[in-house]
Length: 304
Image 1 (tube, rainbow, N blue to C red):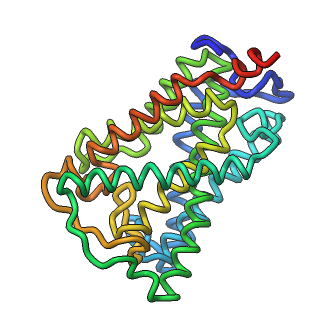
Image 2 (cartoon, rainbow, N blue to C red):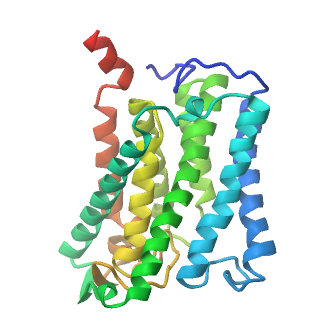
């Protein structure tokens, strides 16, 4: 597959209407934000599950936000693909077979890479170590962590489905692969931007987006990166009592209680380990790994 390829997940043509490239970009932004805010304002805030800023309150609020809000976004885009574009979900990266096996393999890789990131931060003095696995003494906390496992699996899968599945596939068909990667990655970074965060936080989001695109391009599906994103988010949020993407799940640590110490660039401050320089390095290494691997189509050509 070249940088100017027109297809990424196969040659299936849409039987309905495929939106123009600019419109697809606007749709990914507007529909996602509108449904996240709408479900928060109309459903979650009246139930006391999110605050006035639409940030989740406690573990159960976090679970509701992950499942209800992102579930609504996912259903909206699935409906669009099935009834407007009239094409299969395999054409946006949910290819067969072995989807769930690939998902859980990616999930394990996400956990492993976050563990490497946190270990590097700690090795360079970015954390003070507290209690070991305090969550194991509380069945309630373990239940909350199990709920969050499901919640993050849905939330992360929806984000990958939209940005590395649907949007990447549409933009590749309308422009080419290189343009699609750049536009979808910039949009994903913008969606996670906050003026309160340091500039290198946005850099890390951009590096992650490029890492995810490289994974998807080389494997020809989004199952693995959906699992990776889910494992990374869940383990960050529940393993160490640190924020995930600037949000706190308010759960006791499953692995070890960590308290940040030292400069913000080392431990990520309120962003959590995703704001650390070591996150940048780990994700950059992952991107290089995928870029240097042969793609699925190249492997098939060699075998034939």
